[in-house]
Length: 368
Image 1: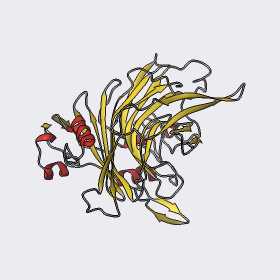
Image 2: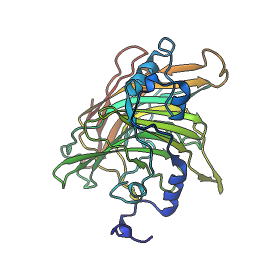
Image 3: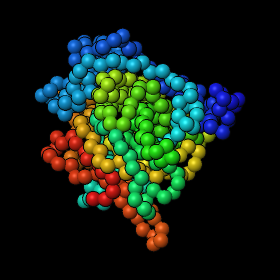
Image 4: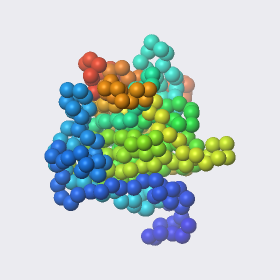
């Protein structure tokens, strides 16, 4: 591919085929001019802009609180625009997010699991239920620091990502992973400057290069973020990310990726088997290497709510159910170290306090 804007081909992040595929699968929705107040809009208008309808406060108190955290005030909607350069060039799309690399699965009686690249929590749908919507709020890390030795000594650079998503937990065809979130980078040569991006991605195990789509919605260290991901059909999601600090938001429609299975092209469905809230240690594009996890301090997901439907009886008044994170499995991030060989905790979720309606998930750098 020819150089673009004075860049050499060495800075290209994805191939032209991947770029065209992403452009065909991610698109925007209608957006009004000026300030828009979702709480004063009718159902048809909200659907036009991809905003979930506000739930009944008595029937769904957890989602009602999450909806009002994201959409309870007037905001400016920024239309989605696919920016080729933010995906195509390494200096813009400089990270990759992958499925959880498990260190150890939890035993039935334990709420804990281990991973080398994820920390946070996830819920598993039971019976005939399927998760169709997930909410979450967080703060983009305001400061990132180099961790003390022996952590952070690989020379790969420092990055972390915060996101919500569906599935991606197990090795089956429909365990793809639609997700939306923010990424943060520590520029050590640049004097410790911290930068951030908003993004959306639909990862699938069989994809050659599951690249994120960097969003043109500005986010900065310290900004408060609200996000919601809704499966509108088995192969389509609408992701909303709202910068609560600037009261600007962006909706994006995403379609499932094409993958090859046994020589046949197919698109995975949204299984809705799990719902996740994750602080991730991302990877470097085109390398089987993880960034070093910076010391991000403390992060607290709030309004962690997942909504499931009972597919065996979808018309029943009890078909819809909302969940907080009180019963979620918690994932601790480990790093393998040498001399002597050992593992060390890098990022750890704290115990969730409150009853079954608890929706707060604290996660912090380091061990318990």
